[in-house]
Length: 79
Image (cartoon, helix red, strand yellow):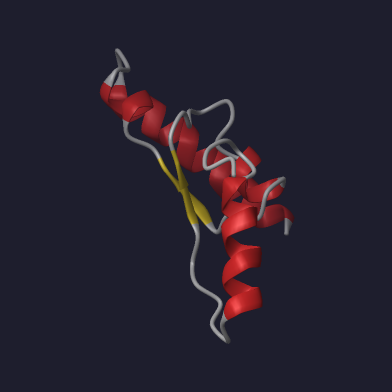
């Protein structure tokens, strides 16, 4: 089975719901940046994202973190 990619959080959530009574928090990690941080949440069912590389490799880590936070807050306001 495919164990990577943006749809993985939703797949994990479905399997866990089908096999238990719990609803765990699912966080997407890997390849996430300020342009795509909304995709795992909006399109694939993750509860949130963990961003490491995009911030650490940025020439302005604080600004990159602010952009990601703003994008995620905008997403939260939508729904």
